[in-house]
Length: 215
Image 1 (cartoon, one colour):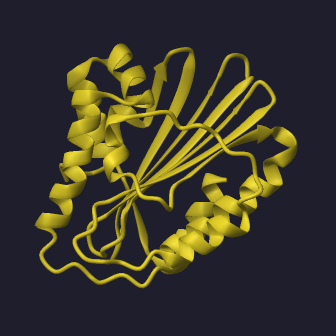
Image 2: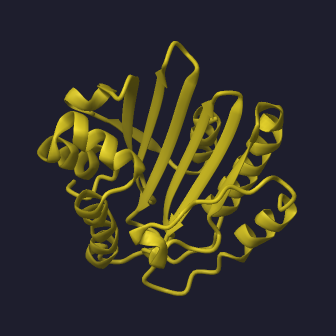
């Protein structure tokens, strides 16, 4: 699905692949990860992470967008296939500096409201997670429906009418605060990498490759 989302992105923005260095291939908690990062001209930083493990019984795909040139929220897509279950998590974080109209995303959520919900639990970042986020979980038979939901939601996000950012220091700072929070207060994937790579390397992975807040 990440390939399809990247194709959607490429229709609107020019992507330039960045060097992920030592982080292009990783191992953690029995999973093998491949990581890519891109500069999307006129949008911001994009990263893709794919993982497989446990003899192919578990797959995880992640795509993240950290807008710096346009006033969209930070976007994080996660898809987890494990034990016959399909989990779709899309989280949007309030890194907005103006009132951007996200009503098109609300419309997409309403259209797919019948898909089974997943309890996201409570986290330190809940105060900046936007209502347009998604948390769904069901059996693998729902894959096509989850795919359609994810693609429609992503299209609505990418095509949101948002202001261009002039002088993006404030925009970058809002994203950097979220990333610093992950590193200091933790998160599901953050904790996995900190255990395997340590604090310093995880910080480099997050700030330079996954979120690009240090670039």
